Length: 640
Image (cartoon, rainbow, N blue to C red; front, side, top):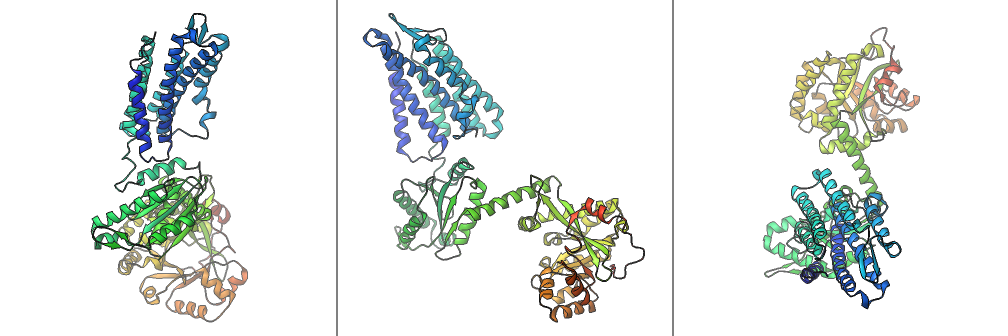
């Protein structure tokens, strides 16, 4: 009745695939799990197909319930087979999620309906029925083609929709094995007497194996998993699972490769890899370049014990053909929760921690939830900063400066602010250090400067009682040789005079002192005014300050508070010394009237702090201070 010619070769090829799969260490990722399920389902389906076909041919030898059971299993495995191929497609399109696919009607609807209709055949004969003449196809037999076609067509549609997410080679492979399966359905429909569908299953599996199950893709020359494997595995676990990682770094690895031969150090690295894989066969070992190894476990790992074992092994030499090497290693342990296990956070934590261990003898750093929360917050702030810069959404807030004697507003400082994705303000203490470390502070400063100029063009300073606005210039901006031309072009754009903008510069900006001094001198000739910001927060060089064309020195809030808490003669003498050099003095961090009186009494000219106002948005500042025109020139107002 049926032709079994293609069955035996298929069976042995599947066994060969299974043997090869288990003969090599496999990365514990969904791709490999689904591929293994695919092989097992295909093998079971093949065996059940043979058994049910033989039983149907000799139906008179078996009880009816057994015939129904074997045929139902055949149809159910038929549906499972196509569903598993569909899952593999979803996984490669990054849509597969173990925690939710079972509850997604789109994923299981066709298969579930097909299984239920098949099970009902025992009573209804819908898909098949068995009578005194043996096996017969039922009126809904073609449901097997509709179900399989549904999963194949859905796969093809998703591939075309999400084709930009994958390399062209992988897109071609996904299309190829789905089209192969579709051709198998057509051939089976045309030649039902041949058990030939398994040949097309096998072709599809071969395409998957050649395209996605490359053993060398995720392994390096030392026989352990590589960086690409680590990223694939951690990315798959992001937001889903908790896991442990113990990492260590061979200290002075780069120097050792230079002092000794590359071959010798590669031999040592290979020995370490062999030791780790043999010592911990149930854990996943990675080598991520430059003498760094990672050991991963999805289950709770006794990292302290493993750390001691590996550290003890490093107390013995690693032998090569020519030499003995005594190596030192620094260790890091990482316990990752499901909430804090995004790829970026974990990799950044590992990279920064391992870098620290390279300089600390016998180091063992333990990274927990607190450290990962901090990194997660930094990542969110960095994302908000990138968005603000790219979309020109850096906001400008003004904080007033008041005359120390009259306590009337005379100026303001323009300050940068950004918001997170929920519209909540992010503290400058969080985003400014990030912007300074990666060079983005230059873009932040440019936006603040131009938006301040635009605001001053639209709203006259006098209407708010202002004589000037201070704008911060970052150290990176100070190093730009086009700073003057850039600032002048923006002033010309908004038809403003340079005297209206006072540029605040910190002593940190004086790295290239000669360049900075020359820039300041040139810009002063154009009418720009300069203010020394945060004086007293670090090392202060009075001789340098005297040589630069500053008109104002802002005392950092740290020394202001220190003096107010324990008054002495140091700060008053410093203020008087600056005033003798013709500098005006601004005191930052004024929070009480008592502080204001103290700083005013020792000679400060201007005060700034929460006592008068916190930094507020431009619109609020305009509303609050509009109509504050000065009736006469301010006694302590300063110009360049």
